[in-house]
Structures are given as C-alpha cells and as structure tokens.
Image 1 (tube, rainbow, N blue to C red):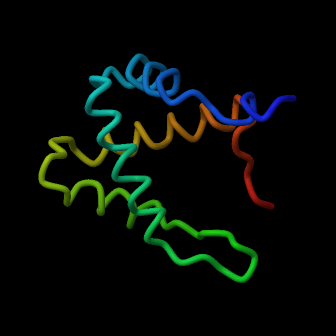
Image 2 (image 1 turned 90 degrees about the vertical axis):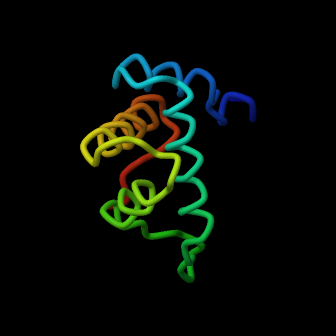
Image 3 (image 1 turned 45 degrees about the vertical axis):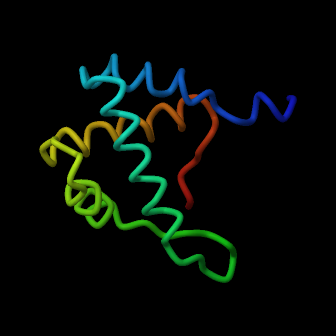
Length: 95
C-alpha cells in the first residue's frame, strides 16, 4: 500500500459527512477544523498517544463563535467521522 493510500482524502471525508449528516460541507469543515485544533492542544502520554474526552471536545466546538450547531449535530458529525475512519482502515479502537 502506498503512502498516499494511508492518508484519507479530506474532500471525500467532508462530502461523506455532509451527505450522511445533512449538514453543509462548509459547516462540516468548520467542525473538523476545531476538532483538529482541540487535538493539537491535547497532551500526549508517554506512548505519544492523545486521550480525548468526547464531551470536552463537543463542548470546545460548541463554544466557538462561528459554530451555529446544536450538541446532537456536532456529536453526529464526529461519530460519523469516526465510523468513516474505522470503516476505511484509517483508525482503530484501542483495546
């Protein structure tokens, strides 16, 4: 598998999320942007992993002035993103 295949296509992801959640693609990109900012600020453990509390992540996204979504919609976008990443082999659950 080439390195290019290891990295997902963001446009494809956004299109998938917009279709599944019925949220505009620009709004999905905004949620993903704030999700990435939250992850980038999180502390890594000794193994280089980041433990993310999903409630804190959703709260962080909802506090952004330009996000005009309700909690359920943000959670749906994030859950659908995770399912997409799992289904396509870009993520896996840590056991």
